[in-house]
Length: 95
Image (cartoon, rainbow, N blue to C red; front, top):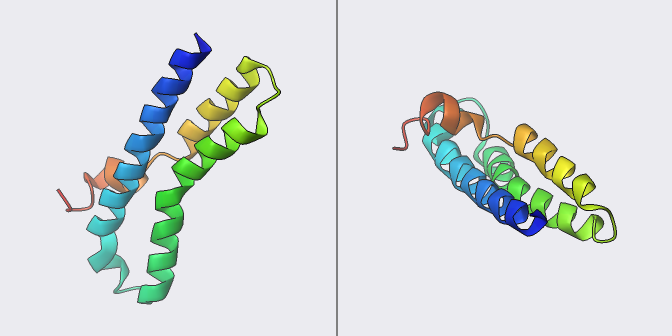
């Protein structure tokens, strides 16, 4: 059961990474009007890497914990890391 849940969450976090890439690329033209390019690039890559880092850190830091602790942390991450630019604007025009 826990292995299946880990596989499902790995897929969710992979889709979140793709969603952040598409959302960030779609917003790039509008965002560069407001903030400098290097700042946007740093924020974009932080957002893109956040789901993968969350998943890896949960697996690493909960190695010796019970399965429910790992699953709760993965659910919390799935709620916190939703790619809102992609969800709200359909990729911000990237599609």
